[in-house]
Length: 157
Length: 367
Image 1: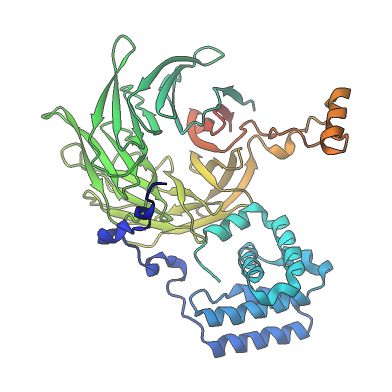
Image 2: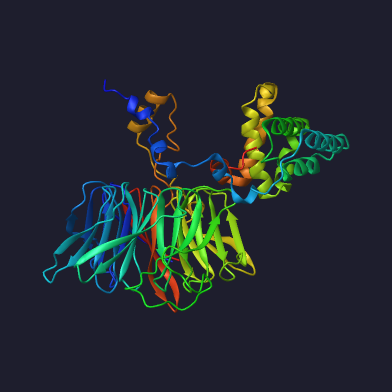
């Protein structure tokens, strides 16, 4: 077989103006968003849990999705993911469609990001079925457009 | 509301263009450009223009002069000059790019054309009388990636470009010796070549497949790979836009769009049928209706299946049912629509658009 090593040579390094730094890929809509600290996201998680214990599932989810820590560290993002997974797993399966319909379309797009991210972490192995149920209900409302937006969006959760 | 459809083989069509009298249709497919005679009920192949040796990515017929510009992944653009006997004489245009040319369009005054490319550059080409030669000037900054589409402002100076770096940009393509000084627009007053007059991103990002100015030129719309259409109303030079309206949809991404009037846009793409958006800067925009709506088409479920077919199904799949065996789509286009163009208009509003797709069909939709 022909030598394929030449494909591993990063030819763009030879042309400095072809290099794109990761910072340049940050979408302008979140470029000025201040990163959240661990303490902040934890206290936010507490307030969401308080709403959950009152039975305000829809409000708790909307609050958690309304303000995702896009520019924060991986640690902060992981804490927020745990909070959201907690909300998702406490909602009764019969209530899912009602809550999804109440969310704004941006919140539904954000929820899709957390669903896919949730499916990728080991902590969610017990609740994969729940995540799939949510996914089905969100796609029923938001259509395939929501999946395509997840793929193209660089605002990562 | 009738739509006419022509199936012209199964080779995907990259781009199409009708002549001013709508009597000739040019199709860019594979490595050639096919010219069809469209006067009869069935389009007939008149001639093929062979000159490129890689996929032809765009074709555009100038409405007045009848010249055809084509560009290809072989990094070249050709201008085809019509001769009296119906043949065409190609002239090579030196684009000076080291990647594929992706898109080409004549300016409305037909003195220039713009070619987008994978070399992160737009080549603006114009004819130099003294050298008898098409020359090109490059718009490079701040393009960060491949340019997927270029579309001219009605004043033939401003240029909208959609790029895979998820930005839709408005540039000045003012060439001193060719253009008269343009009247000031909302995009800028003094616009030397390569001035960036606007730079917009959809909130969820994604490749910008197509961008276009409204008929007045005072608004810009673009479709990106996040299944959304974004409409931008600038407020003046160096100022933030008066309004940016982003309409997310439940559909698959759109590839192409056409303004029907100042308040209507038709877009089409991976969902194989066009949809119409209606709105304005004050009221915002929303999806109004689908043209050739697949949900309204009745499935031909009453098809009789032969006994032979039934036993064959039982043999193959263990069930006699052959429901959902029909692999055709309920839409006219059977695959992604790659290009929409205005076809006919009356009273300042576009009433018909032509579309071509990966399925090799040419459809004229009443909208």
